[in-house]
Image: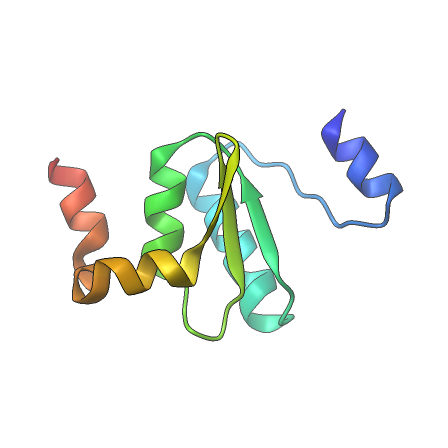
Length: 92
């Protein structure tokens, strides 16, 4: 229902089941089309993967619960740990 309403407003919507497909699609749009992207989800894995993968060139955000996180701000908060974020998430 949300997808249909967004599409009717002219907003590009892609639905996916696999976390990695969601992240790679969002990153690709933000990186190569230079468009701001908001991923809506409640999965911590999505948030971690986006923070780990996003580059300074991408304008990415994630709506997690009722709050929208600017990925660049989260990356700044984790600092150098961003390089190892996927590993840290996997072992915790």
